[in-house]
Amino acid sequence: MAKRLSKALREKRRWIGVLVHPRHQHRDAVEQVLLQISQTIEPEPSLRLMDFFPQHERPALAEQPELARLHGDGGLAIVRAPLKAMVELRNLLQDNNALETWGVMSLTTSGKIRLVRQRMGLPKPKRKQK
Image (cartoon, rainbow, N blue to C red):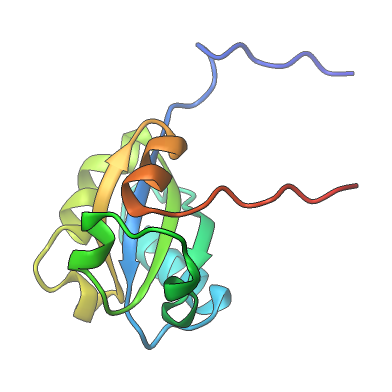
């Protein structure tokens, strides 16, 4: 079995909590948007959609923190991005017109996915049993 890289040698990443435009109701549509965004950044980062809750599933979430209540329309998602691409990515997603242009807008970022889930009021998904 191959030896695993230590934490210090692995690529650093950040987690971005995003608001997703209501027109994107399926995970595939959001992944396509992330692919388009990554193609505009050099070198092309690998963005990965981790959690996605479309607009119609949001009321089922237990408690909504202030961050989620302020942005009531649209779905919520968490995206994993490499640290190297964060400056350009945040500039794209924090723009006032990002929601209309890309269909996603940045709400929060952190180095820990747990903190992003907590700020957005998203539950930790259940692990799939093998």
